[in-house]
Amino acid sequence: MNKLEKHRYFINYEKLINDVNNSQKKLEDCTKTIKLLKEEKDKDNPYKTLGRVFELYKQGACEDNADWYFYKYLESLEGRDKYIFPINEKKKVEVKIDIFNPFIEINGEKLLNPRWHLFIALFAYIDAMYNHPNNDDAKKIIGKAGHPSGRINIRCKSLLTYIKEVSN
Image (tube, rainbow, N blue to C red):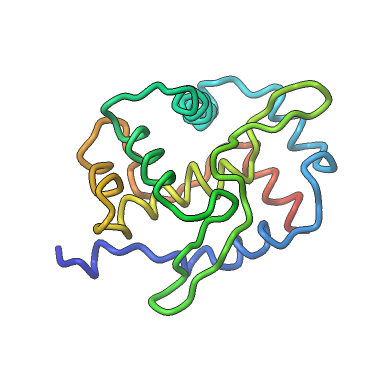
């Protein structure tokens, strides 16, 4: 496989990225999503675990696995409030997101932020694995236990519902 074949662009997800990124609808107004997030079991959304691990890393924990190197890759980025996705060879889309804050509090309850789930835990993780061979931490991700498959397959009910609610 040559380097070009390994590169992953988000051309097939440009509309989704733009719809969610540019939506004026707040999570608090996504009642179906909130209901699902509150009911969701950890086994139904493994990204909750990634969010909890990120909180541990912020407190100084570290480990030799893919999630740790993904976190370190994110730390190496210039901004903490955005992520830039390659749509194709020339076009990029900037998403406004707090990359180190996976949870949001709604009505006193701590819930996984579906924006973080989509943009950081799913898309940015894949971007880090395939598109940043010059970053020492990013290039370690694939060789470590726990790295994502590299396929984008959104099956999580709360995330699918959120996408539908904010895209209308």
